Amino acid sequence: MIRPILTFPDPVLKQKALPVTIITDELRHLARDMAETMYDAPGVGLAAPQIGVLQRLIVIDVAAKGEPPHLITAINPTIIQTEGEVFEEEGCLSVPNFSANVKRHERVVVKGLSLDGQERVWQADGLLAIAFQHEIDHLEGTLFVDRLSPLKRELFLKKAKKWGAP
Ligand code: NI
Image 1 (cartoon, rainbow, N blue to C red):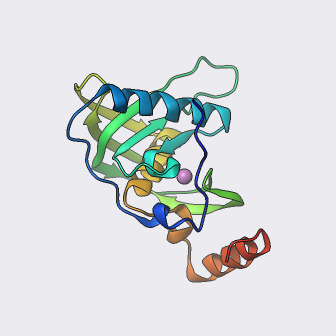
Image 2 (tube, helix red, strand yellow):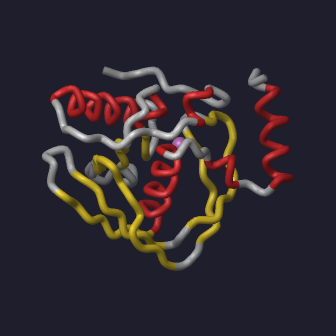
């Protein structure tokens, strides 16, 4: 089921999500809904808080158009290693009509659980590394616009006002 995506400045997006302690059918169902919602949008990642669920669960698929889908579902994802630095353009399904360059690590190693409860380690670079960092930020209540310079953030807030945010 496609769920509505919360958008800035919804206060839920500023909240910290709680660790998943038990993998239930309900959680698996939630993960399915998140993937469906992400593909429908379309987007390359979605975190549970974006559909109003404050649990540490993310879905990512950075496969290019025409490539077969490659869905990653990560429970309680944590970055355990980082390397390098990039400055690439990002957008967010919760921040429509705005994109900006954000400083991120170039490569990350992420540890978490898969939906079957197995511990997983993902080695990510390129767009996948950025997507992991962006989605894990959502679990901390951080949006990419929170990582902009004060001047760029000011510009964002002005634009956000135009499309109706208070
Ligand atoms: Ni986002």
